[in-house]
Length: 555
Image 1 (cartoon, rainbow, N blue to C red):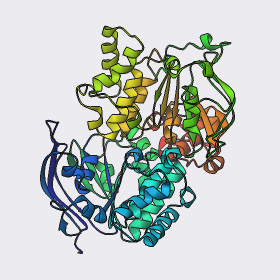
Image 2: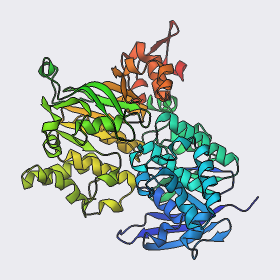
Image 3: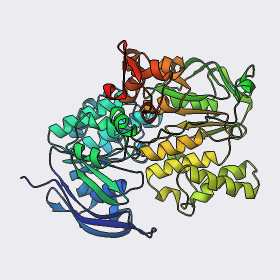
Image 4: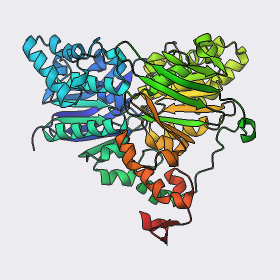
């Protein structure tokens, strides 16, 4: 067998400011032309492993490192980062942390210029990388004005232009719409087939299965729990921890007790909502930047008490711009936004924050405090909550997002997934009446995000929830309304089973039907509404094709 491109032996690392090792006794290898999927719960050590492989540990992240790493047969222990970066390329979870150039072409050129390559070769590599990823049209755009998904592709282009033999992808699908995620996965498979060695950290296991990873490495509490093929993973994994195809969950969940019925937004009684004005109203709202004039086009939209709204759409469709109008960070070019009946032009961001709490897409846009506790206490204190109440609100928010005991740690020292949960908890602690979240499940393992979403929709103080997501299943399970955006327009708004029933139209809008959506559409005559797979498993029977069928017949 050929010499492995990646060889790791007995690798352990403990961060300087933490008592316990982040990874322990990691041993594996990976070959040229292999796709290795690295999975596991948020905070289990996946990103730490990536930092060891690309040399950031111990050069940028200090601590106690033991073990050995060989890349392409060379020990990286004493190599400079510049040399390692020619062997291994990395795309980070949060593209905000990776992009330095003001324009796309400058960003892709950055690494090449540091290698001192001739200008003609740099230009050629820029165009090749952008064309390879299908984003050559972004070449002259300002990186600041790109969507999260577009930034992710630009970061990947900058890495591919360096032509590494090994590619490390840390949650590459986190910011991508479903169609872009599929395109990215196809490109990854193509690169692997062309001989690249790819190690992909990803929570969206079901999506990655479509491109047939050669092996999967499952981590748990800093150690390797499983290393082998996908068939073996199914035998060892808990379906509540790792998101598996809906049919697989259906088979397993029918052996367990049915999930509890959630009381969604318990503070809202239907009789109280009838005839009342909406909490937020968009009236013919249009908005544009100087370089992109039609970001929003004549949007009519309402957030009412009792709504749990999922906003879906492709990267760049205008979803984040829409919610930034709701919280007052942006003002309409034409039309108006009313918050509790008041035009947002007459309200400050601070005044709106007493009604609406907003979780940004990127945690780096929110987190600044020295400790998790101070981060969560900042909002309530600024809203003049009493000191004894602030502490109670902080501790309850930490419990909801499964971060109890982390209150003294620096937020920016946590993993990306944990940072995202800190940013959600920071808004929960403010006790806003309306909760707005941009990609709440980015960087989250399945169990964590299901647990905190279950808790959030049952909070007694919240009157409405709106979340932007590329996770179609999140909308299926939690939303009672789906708002679908395309090219700055609101093209659909209604109950999930109505908006999501036309699979062909969804694909036109760059949404890819999931196994859970297809299963729900199949069982809708029996269930009457969309449900999580665990609940579908406990339907007594289904009616398909004109005859009664048991659960076994649809697997």
